[in-house]
Image: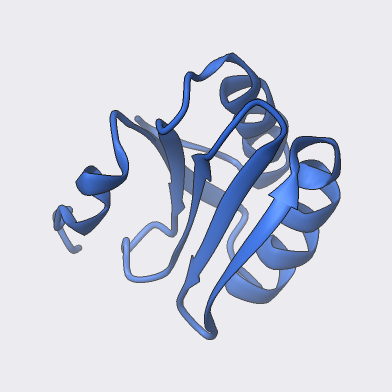
Length: 102
């Protein structure tokens, strides 16, 4: 997917995650694809958020709190970025796929 504005990316990720069937997910990456956030839907009410960048951690969050949590993570992981890349994952096993580095 092309680069999209970070604010619209957060809204779009929320919409996509609500429509997904478990265990599919969404990945937000920086322009260089060296830092990112992965959201994997565990069940209809819970998602797993994995940060890879300045901090390496995994959170379990309810879908109703997803937007609020993504905004705080985006400020931390993408401090100077205005645009991010959004990819849809078919399964959690697609997480290790290397994307082209720029």
